[in-house]
Image (cartoon, rainbow, N blue to C red; front, side, top):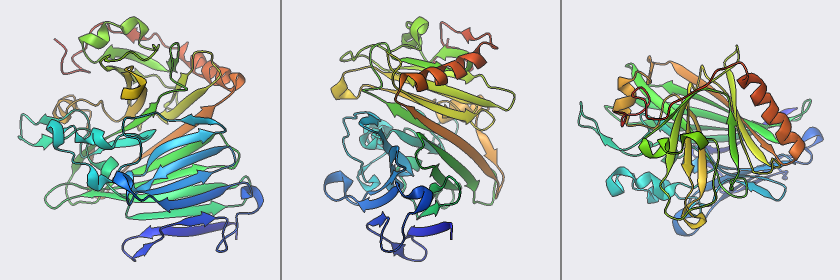
Length: 393
């Protein structure tokens, strides 16, 4: 058979494998998948105890996936180059060690070190006590700290072949919304890219609002003085006055500066006639880059997070497409950026990740973005705009 499925976790049927390796005695990866492998292990010790890691090697990329942390992506490696960032939190953290409510709702940061983690689903953004309901919401929601209750690996040797890891994560509570995230990561042998497809479903019996943001993060060696964000956009606005001071250089990065406060820029992406848009982070010399492709009909907004403090403190930038901005949920609700799902309804999202390690690859990717951007007269706001930021005056 060309297609095989290996169930790693199924809580309902009490299936769980602490470790697994493909190829193995159970199943051989042959033909188009001969140079690929999938390994699953459960970490032990410290705050990583009990964290499942699935390592997908497609012959070009090694992708480390974390089912225990909402199907987030810990890091990606291409040859000797590792894409991700160096957080003060060095290893994946079991959600049982994360108290989201600590430090006035900033506890989410005590588990944050992934290359890509989701923020949502009931809410994301800054902590707040809702002025209308009095509800206290913690930073960035709960989905990144919820473990998958079902995980499998699908392999297909037909044609070019493919490896797909599927997972399901439940975010539900009695008398509260009930959402399920169905996520798949698919890659092709020898490819320098992979695709994430997510489906968010309202499993409850009443209409519910949701929001999601894909917090995609890069540090050294990709991020450095002279690195640049190249993307398709119609409008860019600083989150606050501090970000506005550097609006003329929002797309450029500086060397690590100890103690430098973070900056955020909110954007309306530009897109082609089918809604497709792109963002690319390239290093100073244009010899290395990481890119994202998505559809603005699924993720209509984009946030750039610049955390240019010292390496030891987490020198990093975040490229963050989302259904809304990481403002307090109540503000995003007022701006009507929250999405309502009827009972049983779903919202589908597809994201493609690309990793470039030669000057030729980077140049082609950058030219593709710039050729579309030429059709738009982008608008840059020097100060925060009320539609985008709650601090605007």
